Length: 206
Image 1 (cartoon, helix red, strand yellow):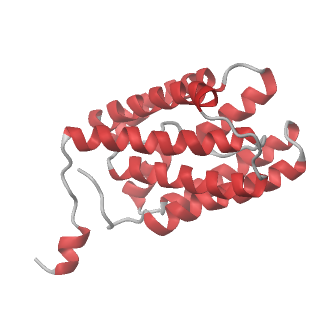
Image 2 (image 1 turned 90 degrees about the vertical axis):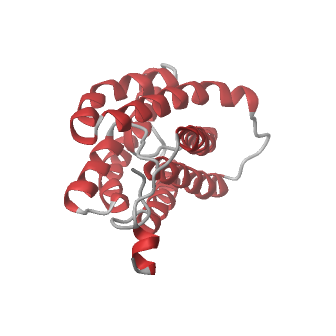
Image 3 (image 1 turned 180 degrees about the horizontal axis):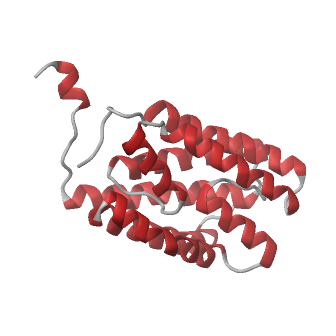
């Protein structure tokens, strides 16, 4: 086996490694979402949809995020298998809880919006990358994106970027234009992290 084959081959993770990755990846995403929420921003995916509904109707973000993902679990099971689906349900449930409790545990007296956009985006991107590499996701559009990458080789970051742009444009109805601009910056940070680091043939879990 060549060095390249050794580097790019799939790796088998233990249950403990998967648990650690799901907790760490979800916490990274939750921290990034907390930064976005603090400065009134949006993002993409089912997180972005939950943000839109939260701003529009005022229901708790965590509850909305959990409910939005329910219809996608069947697709995850049919296309990605039971282990992926169970890990994703775990990550989504943990994310829904963290989204509600983190504001009580972590508060910012002052947060620069530009820093919130970039740092929040990188945290979300890194968290999603950790989940993807352990064959988990935060459900919803992440499931579709991962399926398209595994089936057709489309880079997850680029596909996610297109879907996220649509969600961002819908946000103009509820969020001031300057915050939408910052949201775009945050989403670019998220998708740059994914596009650069998550490619077909690179390190993947089994």
